[in-house]
Length: 407
Image (cartoon, rainbow, N blue to C red; front, side, top):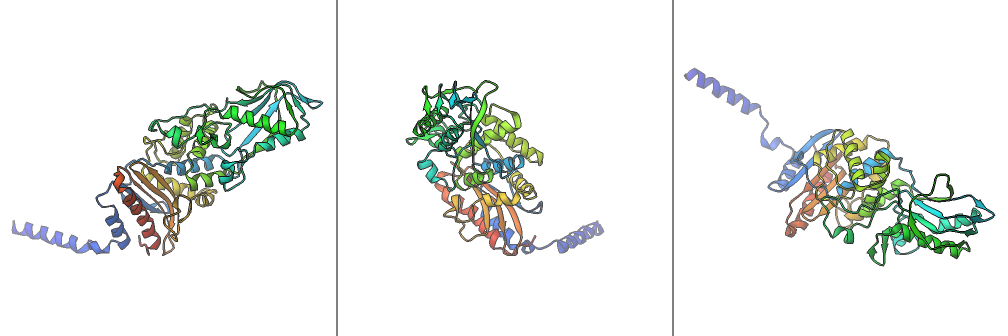
């Protein structure tokens, strides 16, 4: 019995002597431990596909507007960064300057279509101007339209709600996402439910101002009959430009419009919020990451994504030809949604905020030159702790950027 106890004691002594002391754990990891200890927060830090740090990283959480980051990656995997979305006018053959019948204006999901005004002025790039369609029609020889201008509604559905949305979101945070949009689908400060009619009305006014006679009043209607010809067309800015704006300003409108466009590309018309969400899920599954999506903007409290899944997808994106373009679409510290945060920190990250939810995910360059992907998502944050939660996420990114990180 004494020999047996002596043997056990010797084994334990050997194991203890060979185990690294607690102080051998890198300081940056111990610092992260202190930040997240006792909080409802998930964190994962990775490099080259390896996990360097993890805290509750497999737990699915509400990503809030980090959903826009997932949408961006899914779109870039489907379309080239230079892809442009057309808006066209179609009708019968023009004979001696006369178009017999109606003129149809058909959108394919350009969120930038605009007239001059506040919406266009607030964009940091030149949008697709509706007036250019009128100018092109006149240059094409159109002098008279016997019928009406018809705003076509048959490419996207008018669905305007997703599971997990609050009833106030339609009026406050997310204008209707339609295939034919105009001025962000806002008029006199209110979200509108008739963008196709408004686009037809405004084009009618532009045509008349250029000297083109239009016979009837504008209407909203279905697609033209087969055989209608494209008479004129304008295009959106490049997809990369639109995504850069969407991510830096966290535009829910751009996200839901482009999400429906992604849904059509994968599943065909009509474009719906649900199809866009399913396209995000399917894209994530291609890279062996499981997410639950109900919208494209991240307003839904029913969306779910773990920090592990988010970083896995960011790393997958980094290996794509468009990976560098994606990085450029995310705000630096001191820019966009990070305007008052992380100034001077070498980080590119998307924020996410809902009531009780705060998230930050992207890429950071450490002092030792490592490029890390990271995701930090806090859920169930009391309102009184919102600023503290945001500061904790910022401290994670700042710590990574300033550390001489050892694996």
